[in-house]
Amino acid sequence: MGRLKTYVESAVPGIYVHNVMVGGSPAADTMHGYFGNVNDQVAEACDRLAAIPELQNGFNAIGFSQGSLFIRAATQRCADRLKVKTLVTMGGPHQGVASLPGCDVFSPATDAGAFCRAAEAAIEAAAYSPFTRSSVVQAQYFKDPRALDRYLERNPFLPDVNNERVQKNETYKSALTSLERLVLVRFTEDTVVEPRDSAWFSTYEPGNKMPRPLIPLREQAMYTEDWLGLRALDESGRLVMAECPGQHMWFTDAWLKENVLDKYMYGGGTLRDESSSNAAVKISSSR
Image (cartoon, rainbow, N blue to C red; front, side, top):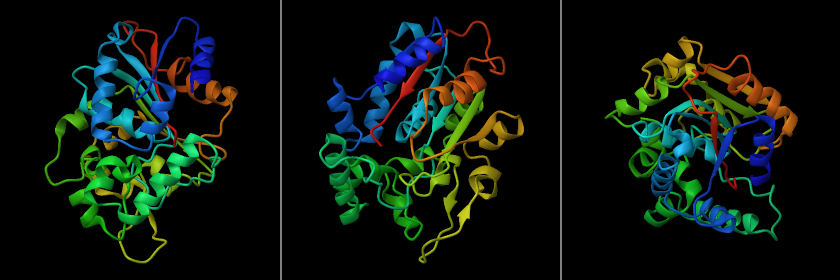
């Protein structure tokens, strides 16, 4: 994602771009994309972003793959320190994944391929065991429609971030409704995020038989009761559900510029006030 950072800097003259990494090196960041405590990783990202002077007046953010979910969590949990303006998420598993992550997109000879297969094996063995759910990243947003009670009780991350528990966190709703715009990009042929419509907050109907019907966002209690402020964003025209043709994370620089940077962030249609710094944050991911 370092190359993409350079491209965004060239596409938007004068912009400050910060690429979030977990750990002290690209290799460590790749490993932490599969192993680690997501709540701790989000807290670390909040601390790092809050300490960057160029971001103090507000910034736009783009999350890629599972990084989409993590930057949304940071936006919700750290709204007192992070002033996110427009948030774009690309292929984000906002409603989790209902099956094992697709590792076929990685060569077995790469670190990412090896880490992916190790995480896959751990989830397959015991997704909700104490060790797996606290140390395998993908297990912390694994959502099996056949075991929603266990998911709500034992998953340490996603039920909280999605405000699915009985006690709602109103600061999460306040944080998202303060956004100028939330853009959710789905990859049309995505086989890594299952279901691919999780990028639009769709989720499977609960039940034992698979495959289950999908429930679109606007038909869920999350939307009708507005647990996260998505309905408020939608009704005010600030929630966008967009598509990118192709497989998970397959897009060109030209597509990103035309359909994201120019259209929603730094072009003529972007909602921005002049006091905001010309800054952006990218949270990428090995997934």
